[in-house]
Length: 415
Image 1 (tube, rainbow, N blue to C red):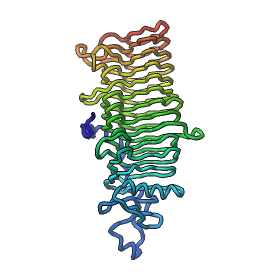
Image 2: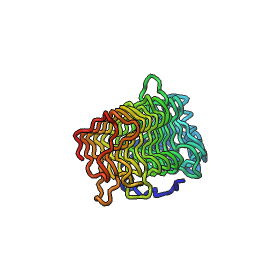
Image 3: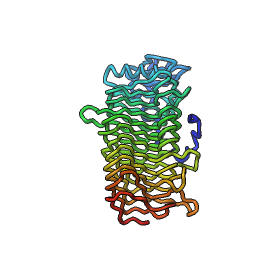
Image 4: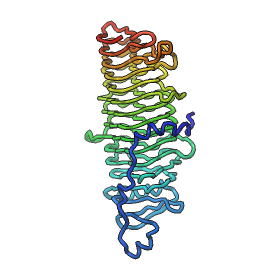
C-alpha cells in the first residue's frame, strides 16, 4: 500500500510550472451597490459575479449565495450538499457557474455535475473528500461541463473511488488548473461514444499525485481525448491506464509521469487512432526508490509515440506486445533496465508486426562499467515485418539490437 503522505512535496519546485495559478479576480468584480440592506451585510462581502451561485465557508457551514437575486438560499455543514444544491437549481434551468470562494470545503457527499454546469474555484478553493466513494462525478450523458481552479484531495480512509470521475457518454467536458492528490484514483474517465461524434474530454494543467491505484485511467470505447500540460506522480499502480479504448481518438502532449509502482503507461486493447504522446516524459526522477516499469502497449494498434523521453525504467523503456501498425519516432529512450542490468531493452517488441522505430536515440549514457540498458531494440516471439532505421543505438550494455524477424528492415542506424 502506498503511503498517502509519501514525499508529497518532494518535487514541488520542479512540478510547479505544470500548473498555472488561477486568478482570484476572474469571477469577483467588486461589491454590490450601497443599499441599506446590503450595507448591513457588508461583513459578508457578497461580490457581483459572473457566477450564478457562490459557495462560501462561513462559521463552520457553507452558504449558498444566489448572485442573480442577491440572496442567500441555503446552508449546510457538508460542502457536498451545498454545492449539489446549487448544481440542482441551475440544472432545472439553463445551467450556469458555481464558484467556490477561497477556503477549505469538507465534502462528505459526492457532487454530481450535470450538463451546462461549471464548477470554478477562486484561487485557494480546496475540497477535502471523505465521501466513501467518488468526490466529483460528471453525470452520464452530460455535456458542456467544466471543472476549473480547484485543489481536491482525500481526507479520511482510502476507499475505492476517484477524486474526479467522468461517466460514459459525457462529452465537451473540460478539466483545467486542478491539483488532485491522496486518493484511490486521481481521475477516471469512462468512455462510450458521445452523440453525433461530438468532441469529448479536454484535460489541461492538471497535477495528480499520491494515488493508491491509478493517477489517470481512461476506460471504455469511443471518445475523443485531448490531454496536455499534465503531471502525474507517485501512483500505486499505473501513472496512466488506457483500457479497452478502441475506436477513439487520443492526443497526449507534454505529459510528465514520475514514480509509479507499476507501469508508467499501460495501454491494453487500445486502437490508438492517433494516440500521439508528444513530448510525453516518463522517467524515474531524482533516483528515488520507486522505479516504474515500462511504457507498455498491449494488444494495440495505431499507436504513435512521437518526440518523447522514457528513462530509468525497471525493465524495458517502451514495449509493444501483440501490437501492429504503430510507430516510435524521434524519441529519447535511455538508461532503462534498472531491475536487471543488461537484460532489458530501450524498445522491446513481442509478437508484433508493422512497428516502425525511427530517428530515435536508444542507448545508455552511463560509463561503460555502469551501463544498464542491454539492447537498443529487442524482438521476441513471432515479431516480423518491422522497420528500424535512422536510430542512434551505440552505447548499450550488450548490443545495439537483437532482431529475429526474417522480413524486418534494419538500415541506416548508428551502432
